[in-house]
Image 1 (cartoon, rainbow, N blue to C red):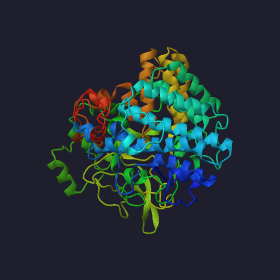
Image 2 (image 1 turned 180 degrees about the vertical axis):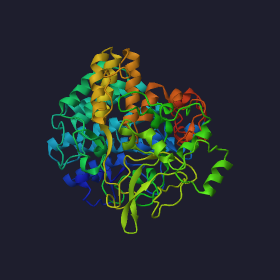
Image 3 (image 1 turned 30 degrees about the vertical axis):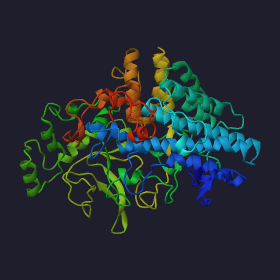
Image 4 (image 1 turned 45 degrees about the horizontal axis):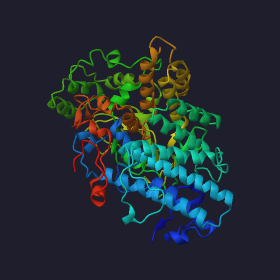
Length: 575
């Protein structure tokens, strides 16, 4: 008997106390149970959110493969991933759980539910969107998977894999059905009781992204134009966009709905915060120095360390540590530094901090919006009855008055730390696993940059420039074609500029890794010689190893192949 779990990620349903699990044959028999059943499908967006340890499967966790870094590394990055990898197996299970919930709703709503016809039609459209989204995620990673379109028992799930194209075709059809449903609104205004539910603008945005994956550039452009026609626009302030007060701005198209309640909140604070943040958090995920170096000067020219510290680029990596040392080192600290073989010839006893801070000044403002840089402040937890501003210093001493050093789990290493989606002070959330700010799955900046990409691939580069400039203008960095440094020199140059823009815009949003897979650029971007988990000056603590081009498609999980012998393995992976 198929069972549906009744928990919700949709805010207007959160106040309904779920009765546990109900058999599918009874699930849809009243209007209220229909609402709860639909909420259970939305809740599949939350499967994998852990409150006791980082799962590695929440969307923002995926940034560890490109712009972020997991402090202890990752099997995919260290060349040790196998077909039995737990992340792979759980992602497969969780996405199929969402598909089976959606299938249950799509089968039973028209068959059983007594809800009004217009409401049922809207719900069916929403369920098709969610099914398309779950298949979209599977296809991004596995490149062709079994397709199930009706509720089945576990022992009936033995289909072979469809081709990657066949899965894209299904996704497009579901999203087209969603768009064509007259009872589905184009958008919900801020504060509407149904905000968080699927809309036509979300369906256009996701379908456009699906066309982008298939390189159907003209169709992608047409869908992204529809998103703009729906009234979406960029929020004026990049920093404030990611605060709870603005989670329903015109920029947000589809988000995972969070609420400051146990089981319904965000965990970004827990795994991207610090011990000095409210709740005493783990800095499980860090910012990679390569990302920091990508942020341009405010005029749009490339950042170069030698412009701030002449000779820095040519120095042995370990020797660069001297520039990051705090002012007025103690004798013990000096001894520890020299014992590591670091020369103090370039150390300024009274101005070392000020000198290195200059490297982060007059840069694209998104840098300091996304990253806690050395010697910058972060408003954190209370000490002695008041929220304190902590400073990221090296070497770390202590977080108590009068120093208030920013404290992490990794005090013997000095890393760049996340700032986006890390809450401020002690009043923004009740618990480190109960962040109230919604997590964006699709926002308008993503649409603008995908739209620009599609236009550029069509050879319409001049039309792509103003779309990218919308994003850059909001950020406060030099516009394309406004100076010699920002002049676009043809289609390939524009392609690289769009990719650059996406990498620096979507930090901690779970977008960049999927981009690198789509562009087939992951190897060259991340696995160059000498890369790995790095401290701020570039010293590697965990090296990266490229195992082979087969990494561009995840393996079909060993456990699934053992249960279903018809599943073929992706090329290069060996069970």
